[in-house]
Amino acid sequence: MEVRTLGNTGLKVSHLGAGLAAIGEELTKSDIAQAGRVLNVALDGGINFLDTAASYFISEELVGSTVAHRRDEYILATKGGRVAGGRSFVWNYAGISESINRSLRRLKTDHLDIMQLHSCGIDVLKEGSVIQALVDAKSSGKTRFIGYSGDNEEAQWAVESGLFDTL
Image (tube, rainbow, N blue to C red; front, side):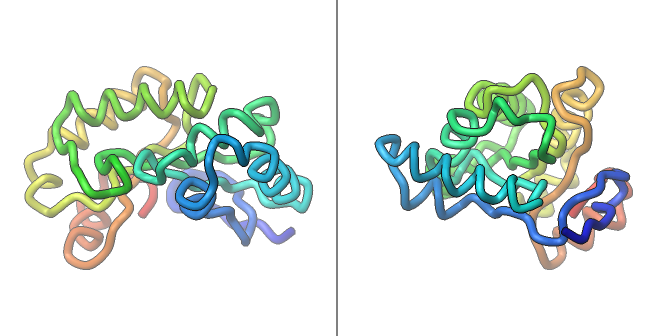
């Protein structure tokens, strides 16, 4: 499979990645075998980029329960700040820090490759405490890189700030 360098990370990711919102939204914990088949087929087929989020219902748990034993084979990106299917938000230092710790537990890993803020407003970005939570997680080894997941003026601000490794 063709690979490309992701953002400013130096990470080589497959041209195709696995976006995992659907498995978290459509499957239940009783569908773990199905999730495992999907994820293992993706990895066996050369996909090495798994993208999930705290707000994708049970997506993180399904990844942790099915492919954590293959952790060295994939680049793992998740997102924090949005919870409960994206309908509620936690945009402060403590909330982002807890989101990171919860994701690590759910994903059954000791580190994330990329931790992203999940579509917060420009006012939250400019205030800075959520970015500081990511920076501190990076400094402590909980994540290798930090990113912003969003669009419009927020995405432009994120790029121009120079603070993020990915968008």
